[in-house]
Image (cartoon, rainbow, N blue to C red; front, side, top):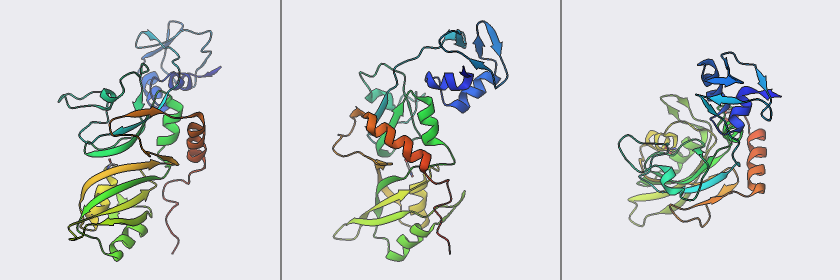
Amino acid sequence: MERLQKIMAQAGIASRRKCEEMILQGKVQVNGQTVTELGMKADPDQDVITVSGKPIKFEKKVYIMLNKPKGVITSASDPEGRKIVSDYLKGVKERVYPIGRLDYDTEGLLLLTNDGEFANLLSHPKYHVPKTYLATVKGVPHGTDLDKLRQGVMLEDGMTSPAEVEYRDVDPDSKESVISITIHEGRNRQVRRMFEAISHPVTRLKRITYGDLHLQNLKRGLYRHLTADEINSLKQMAKSAKPEGSHRKKS
Ligand code: URA
């Protein structure tokens, strides 16, 4: 017997939190009875569980790394008809959804899965695995500017946690430079806002790592399935990741 929201998340319906909301909204039935309170347990092998009238199915769990091109929306549909990430997942039969998001103009490593538990673990607001981005920025930030990013900068939604920041490339005429930045949080447009805070706006942004996963030579617009070792390693990393904010250096 397992909690209903856990069974639903395992079946890939949505994250556990979203499944709880569905239960509270009266969308879930067990053996014909609508459940509206959290805490109920069920047996996925014996009980008939339906969500909005449809019986839940246990699909094979899939874990995918996509090299998202820029100009693509990280969402299941787009009313404006722009390209969405699932346009790049031809051949994936399972209904997968992204873990976190990349902006429309950001490219690079995006994870997708139908394992709600895994998605929940990796996107839990309290724990964030490190993610590295290559940011092409206008001009060449001074070393003291990069130090500010390393220590934390004040954004509208508060101080950022310390980041690891390195120069990667500097344009010969100093018009732009490429900086790698590793952050441990997942705030909206965080990297772009951090560079805006030091007056070096980002012109191109690419995520190259997620935890210990690296894009390597995966071509833009292509995807691959993660290996069992990669999946386990990410789970371990998320479980041992420090709570957000604890990366702050003690002064
Ligand atoms: N930071 C950003 O600014 N954009 C992204 O897509 C991801 C991180």
